[in-house]
Length: 177
Image: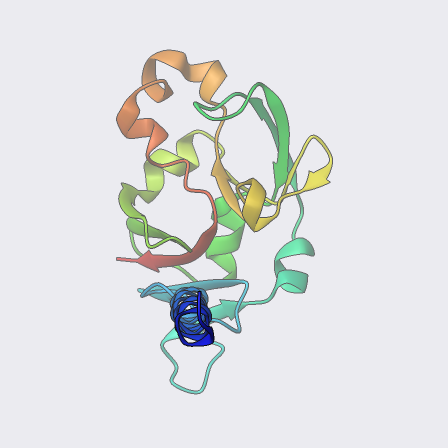
């Protein structure tokens, strides 16, 4: 093998590596519509209180969310065994932004979103879990926020595939309609 084919081979590997790296960097920079990079949780839509200059959303910090009173939900999910999930009630989080609507669009970091009736979630004492079994949730482990309700306590109502779609992990935005 002469030096020229070897050089071409290594150059090809280098170019492929750069190309793959740029794709990864661009993916990491993407933020779903309804979420903001500088907010722990963005609440937008029909709300009475805003925190940003554009006056279109309530951008809640991690510190602010963690300062809210917490509740514990002991349940399993289709993806986790029975665990103790801990976090503030969704209703308290929405109260912080002065939410006035009855429909919520829950938005996740991976661009998943689902629309759900706010009263439905409130009926079951839904929380925004920040920890599971005493350990803070991370992006790699359903966090930093995981929409959670007592699924095991209401198996008939909450044990359906539709209800499971409301258990949004990596929650980053809530649009109130």
